[in-house]
Image 1 (cartoon, one colour):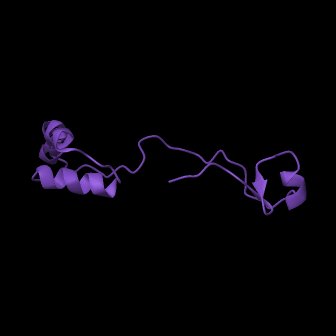
Image 2 (cartoon, helix red, strand yellow):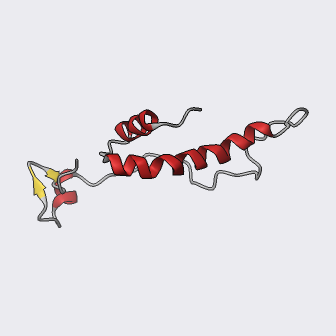
Length: 94
């Protein structure tokens, strides 16, 4: 994979990050090193190796999801001062 300024700009755009030219210059060798380390995995001979989806068997330890009774809207909002029009009011999120 070609790691260049354009790749870093695309990754930053997808991640909704604004990077300066100096930050891009700084991250370019770091990203090359990281992706280079991962590319070594392509060199591993895996012929005859069974795929392993989970190396450790995991069991579902959660309870069954059963519907129960819920608080009505008025009861849920009675102990908060942060409410508006029958809903919890939280901080603005970008």
